Image (cartoon, rainbow, N blue to C red; front, side, top):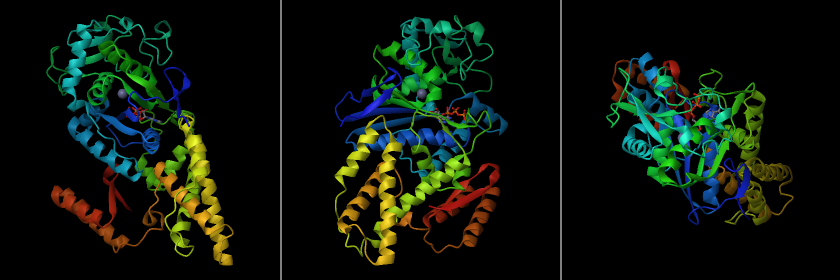
Length: 480
Ligand SMILES: Nc1ncnc2c1ncn2[C@@H]1O[C@H](COP(=O)(O)OP(=O)(O)OP(=O)(O)O)[C@@H](O)[C@H]1O
Ligand SMILES: [Zn+2]
């Protein structure tokens, strides 16, 4: 069976053939860390987490890199508002990002390079572009000459003539830029320092990198000149990914990525869920109401390229879906011993059906149909067993189905451990005990005794209680 993927670059499905046999070099554009992540970010992270897991399951060795954008006007604005530093804001939201992702069972990338840690590579790339005539300095800024790059527009299919300068969403147009640029299409790869902003020494004077250049530099540094898979949300196709291509390919003369894959947006009433529009639901708010596994199912039930609407009904359907799968998983934990389950392998037929579905451009929604079918069958057999003392189907076949369900859940990053899928197990601490310790921690932090605050947090963590600091100083908790 061949894996095929839809390549945004060629606008068609193609067989997936890696540069090095059996190895995948994969890069995902990460988060700008100035706030808590919302469900839109969760979709991007979950989709590519599952793609990575699937590729690993298919036998590939995957090197997966995701960056953090920790230099940005939005981070600076927040730092100013809170009278703190850009680093402090970034650190806080990187920590929050990892907490959220851990709950959603998104596996850690192999590395999370940050813009602020990648300045040497960024500056080298800017200098190279300047040397080759693709970039020019202008009064402390450095701009990329878009018209110099003949292939500009090949990813998004946009032609320069059709483009309205500046009408492309996030273009980082500072007030003074239009007069410093030779052409309205040019974009900044280096920005001269403004008073009071963090800045780094460079051959063009003190300044900071533009947004697009950081990914070009990090991909090159971490994965090489041409990678197998470059992924991200479809909102990044233009201008971000178009500009990454222009920068990297002008510098190296090599294609930046063989395959460009993009996930669709989470929408609310037809509009992109976004912090700037204020129509977002943070992951933490969502997880206060629904199981993280239901969120994963909500994401996986739609094809990754299509937009999805965030509605209460859709979440409810995903929650019901998770209950069904959980019931299927519980079947083995509850009745396995009684039915004489030993250690058998999974069903080849069912596994093959799953793989055939997913091999077609990561159609996880189709693949999930196999999991639901098994889970429903096991649930039915569980009921028959309870009422009639024995199952209709032979236990050996049920065991094979159950093992397949466990295996495939693991491919999709769904919980499978008996403890995790059984109802919350009591762990000694009552809710009041926990609330009391949280209150103590709050007092400690108020008195600036952060060490004691951290100690209390760790003490709770040891007991399986995870604290989540919400905006406005409120702390919620859940059993880990
Ligand atoms: N509504 C959404 N649905 C799916 N993916 C999204 C959504 N919003 C952002 N993303 C993706 O999340 C990743 C991180 O994006 P980034 O931090 O730049 O957020 P952003 O697009 O600026 O979000 P916002 O507009 O809410 O500030 C990107 O790959 C982006 O495509
Ligand atoms: Zn990027």
